[in-house]
Image (cartoon, rainbow, N blue to C red):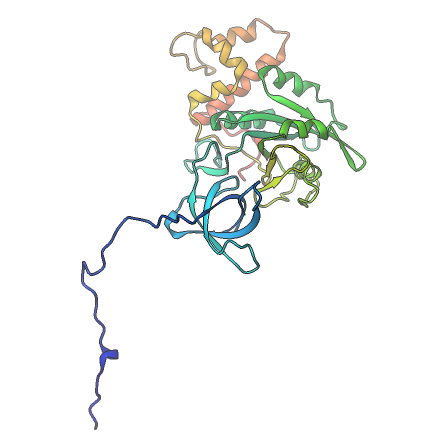
Length: 351
């Protein structure tokens, strides 16, 4: 039997330690181009290179490996390299995420330690609420206002379907505390009040949140006719809307002198605030925060807090039920955040 002859292809040399120097230095990517993230879909990112500039064009990108678990969300300002032509079949890489001016977060509930970043660099949070079909939920509104305050954003309450119910009660509840309000309703194919909405959004980046079925996507389609966001009806049995938008997307609103963007988000049934410190919750209730200045030192402002000024404020005006409703909403939110309250069924199930 012939003896098999071996050559260099049969030899496997395992490199020893130190043969390949390791370094934490990363490529500088000095040729990277600035871009704005407008959408995320299964690991692919829609970005606009040179946003609002003369060379603006759309590009599809992936996240570079060196970014690790850093999450990229709509509204992020990033740097991209690679094939940035935007032609079919090309793919660029996101290599840097810029500093974020604001970050809107939420959690599944008030005790969940896992935060979910929704959008970055938005100026205001637009809380879209239907006046009927489905019924408005003031505690959901309060949660969103608290999240906006914690994120350093302004809050705008957009009340829809005013042809089905009177907005006066909600306007009286939130206008005195500094929440700007716009009211809309449909009249045939037109949306009455759309000009007021445009004025409130002009020159800003706004993120829209709300329950499914409140008319959020309808409002976005009216503001951005080319958006084509899916709309859905409210379930007659549960009184809740069906999820139609499945991912957040940033859209430019045409017809404004200054760049104006809206970020449409999927409908939510809860808005957890586990990331918001309990001490920050009171600051989101501007009217109550002022009253609480008269509280004794160390007051928790909870329902069982002795000599709390909030109780005196409510007792001083028994003919103003809005005062009691505001204090009750704050205290329920505080108890939920501290994990001392049962979940409120009116806030809906976890998403």
